[in-house]
Length: 120
Image (cartoon, rainbow, N blue to C red; front, side):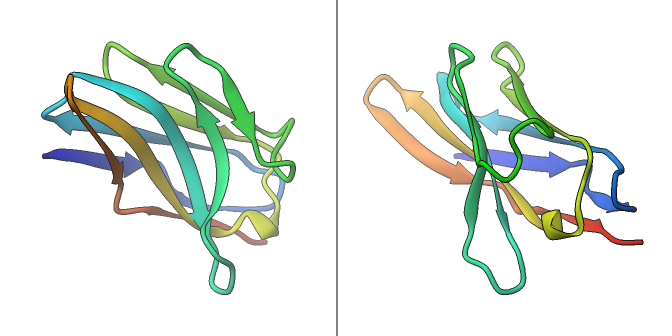
């Protein structure tokens, strides 16, 4: 079993910054894609940013130029630096990871989520 634990959420005014962190632990051989999703009160869960094991990245159009995803393969962690935050970024943010538990077993895991609120 693998656990993903997020931290770093909070409340900031528009234009502010937050950094989210996610750490994977447990039965891990390696971690492939790691990503951040978000879900607001009325919207479906959407992909915010994704990073491959080699460092390739993909961002939602709404966050390009403002958010930066990064990872540390040795520590099995992924961070999301969020700058120039807008009220519409308010949501629960969830870490997601594709984990190789053995050479034959790949499973997808979710964290419990951390709340980000952008409000004046």
